[in-house]
Structure formats: C-alpha cells, structure tokens
Image (tube, rainbow, N blue to C red; front, side, top):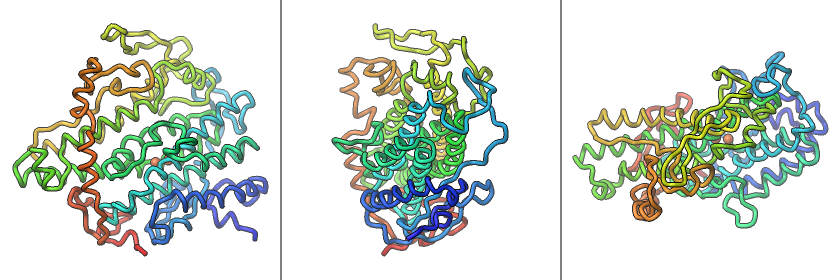
Length: 474
Ligand SMILES: [Fe+2]
Ligand SMILES: [Fe+2]
C-alpha cells in the first residue's frame, strides 16, 4: 500500500517528490516503529498523551498541540529556512559559499559526526524508558514523553541527512542507529554517558538540565557547519531542545522549592529529618549536580584536540554563536589553558586556538549552566536558608582530556587518590543517597496531584491548567 509521506511525515524537504528518499524511508520507518514499541516508554503506548508536534519552521506557529498515542506521533523532517547566499563562517575557507552537497574529502568525517549526534537521540529514549512507572505527576509524565518523542524526531532528522546525502553507507548507518542499545554489553551506544540507565526522576531532571544542554552546544556547533543541510537541521532541532532544558531547570527548581518549604516548616537542615519528611535534602541534590555536570564535561572531548582543530579548519564544526568571536579563522592565534603539571600542581600551556576548540565550547556551556544555578541559589537565599549550589570545577572526575585520572575535589584542588576515595560520599551520590532517591519514586497519576518531594509547577502546558489530564491512562 502506498503511504502518503506528505501527510504521514510532516516535512519541508519536499519528500513527496523524492522517490529515492521515499524508498529509503519506507524501508526504515517500520524498523523505527518496532524499535519505539520495544525500547520506547514502557507501559504507555496506548495512552493518549497531550503532545506538541512540529508542523512547520514558522517562528510563531511551528508546533500544534493535541492528544495522541505515541506510536501514532507524526515524526517529521524539518530544516530551518535556507539563508540566501550563506557563506562559510569560520576556518580556512571563511567567506566562500557553503556546501549544499557533501564534499568528497569530508564525507567520512561528516558522516561520523552525524552518526554520533544521531546515536544520542534514541539512546536517551532507551535510558528513560521505565521512568513513566514512577512519575511524580501527570504533568511530568507528559513532559517526559514530549522529550522522548522529540528525541525520536531528532533521530529522524539525522537519519534524513544520512539517507539523503550519504547513499548506501548512510542507509547502513541509519540501520545501525536502531541496532545499538543503551547499556548493551556487545553493542552499546557510542558515548559513555548515554549507556547509564536513568532510573529515577532526580537524575532525569539533571539529565535534561545538564546533558540536553550539552546536546544544545553540540547542535550549536553543527548549526555553524559549512554543510548547509546539517546546519539548517540543527538550527531547527535547537527550538525543541529548549523545552527539554526547561523541563530540567523547572524540575530541579520545584524539587528545591519543596525542600525549602519543609526546611522552613520543620526549622531544620538535618538531612536525616528531611529524609524522614520525604524530601530531597540540598546536600544530596548538590552531589547529583556534581555527578551529572562532571559526566557532561567529558562529552566535550579533550582540552587539546587535533581532531577539533581539523574540523574547525575545514569548516565542518564551528563554535557556538561563532559570530560572537572576533577571529573566525584563528590560524596563528594562541591561548592559555591550565593542565596538570604531573607534580601535583597546575601549569599553563600555550596552545593554538584551533587546538583548544573543545575547551572554548565547554566554557560557553559552563556559563550557560550557571544561569539556572544562580536562579536556584537566589531562591534558596530568599527563603532564608544558608546553602549554595556550586558547579564543580571542569577538572573534577574527568575520564577524558588533560585532567583524566587526576583526582581533585569538586573545587578543582588536586588531592591524593586516597583522599578522593575517603571523601567520595561527600563529593558524589553514595549508594545510600541513590537508595533514598529510589525509595521516593512512587507513581502519582491523579490529575493535578504531585509527589511529596516536588512542588507543583507554576503553570501548565500551552496555557492549560496544572490539573489538566495530560496523559489519559489506558
Ligand atoms: Fe535531541
Ligand atoms: Fe533533548
């Protein structure tokens, strides 16, 4: 039976007139749906969920809202509008026209970048597949599913590029994106962080705040790419990504607000008492921040990287908001970065700006992470509580780069391995912290009701009340 792709897959890439692409998608789509049934959100495939669906790239009205069963979600393909006469914004070919096709010499490197980005999208859906069973409210359940279907759409976005521009190898890579699985022994997802299961909601909010924000910065770098279809795809993905980080930021805010309420009610900051009262004490929350932030630091790669220098020089992957930098070519410029001196101290190393691209992207990310942290601290201070959440140093708990394997305290001070091990439970979530968080995870599905460890949101979705039945359970 012929499928009307124009109807089934909302798109602005004229899918209806590209037979070759249609055939490729006809082949891939049923596999995607099988994957979604098998490894997507467990237990809610027949529920009606109030979701937004991207239906255009119009800044004002790009999405429509309505109840849909997730397997019937219309995963679409959208590229931001083409900028007329766009030129290369950085690197050796600065100012030349951007590429509408993949240059032969950059084919494998571009394919690898697209596959790596694409791999994270279904990975996160897999990581979060059991969370629905312990949702703190229907509002949160709906937000989880919104994030999940959009990560599914981001997979579609990358698969579109692979199918449309990389021929047979692209089609093979698209198949493999459904074959690797998060946490699998023999065929895991590409990046480490995406193989850790997310089995409770504190980590889900941390993931959407910190890890989705890493996604934002990767997309920002790719949105600068000279390969124009990739740049336009990533630009549009960023509009959806903003909601994922909003889910994270407001989720953590609501947890803090609830904890502050109980702290003031009981007039205590004793974690044991607060745990008895069923809220998440601030020191535990801070250890989760330390864990998730530091695991994201590695996602930016090594401080000094010849790969990053090459993809920058070639115009393949830029820096976030490249226009804000003064020198877009950076051929001979240098900068200083801090590296361990192997004698327990720090030394300054002068490196080419191009070799330190990862560090520049990481620093932009850190600055962006601070915005929410500052807001949380303001809320804590306002309620009269003396506690500060700090982001750990980028040196802390690294597995990649100059600081890999160098034990430090969260403030970046180098310490001995013995001290790190001794103080582990002060820095990072302990087994008992995790057990406590798990003990809080009880499903709440009465419309408008919240679990005891999280405050109600300020507002609902799309101007609906918080009490709206966002997921109609079946
Ligand atoms: Fe995504
Ligand atoms: Fe996301």
